[in-house]
Length: 103
Image (tube, rainbow, N blue to C red):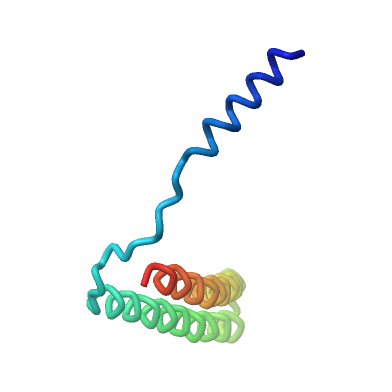
């Protein structure tokens, strides 16, 4: 039993000496990275909005033309486009927090 205790104390001492470096900005304050990220954020939101509008049209056309497979594809597309909006909306604060912590 004392061997395990000695091993645990040795591991604790070894791990206690590891340094935790401060965060550093990998872009060196470049405005280009922020611009690229903001274009990507808006592009993703616009793409999800377009997909939601098109899927609504696909549902309408599918129901009016008596094509249930098209209406079903429209419903699935609408759910996935709304899911994409939720993921993008959650990712924006995460990215802002990570880049804000590095500055």
